[in-house]
Length: 170
Image (tube, rainbow, N blue to C red; front, side):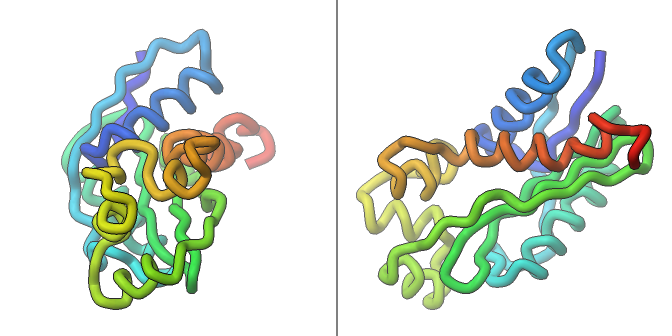
């Protein structure tokens, strides 16, 4: 059985990792552990570089706290007027990484972010939801639930698995 440690206690992130590994390794038994660790960056990263640093910091903190076969860190952030997330997966010292799809944010959400409000809280204010970041996220709200945070993260996590799906090439 593989142990997969996720650098988050967020159910949407943990579920995305679980679905990704089940889809890519259907014959493999897995155990997923979500552990909240600090990102070392702002609560709402405002650039791709800051977002990647947050994911790297989470991965490092996770590895210091637990032993696992795979370590996964997901950090969401902004890149100009769009939101996205970095995915990092480490296994036996090898790193896979990918960015999720990006989506435009409404001008009012961007203004709230500029005022220091975190994206999930901004979306809750705009849409009258509660704790949307642990459900469908901004992605679900803005696509009328055609996509969810978990579904977009699953795709990006699969891309981050490429070095492990093709070990002979990496």
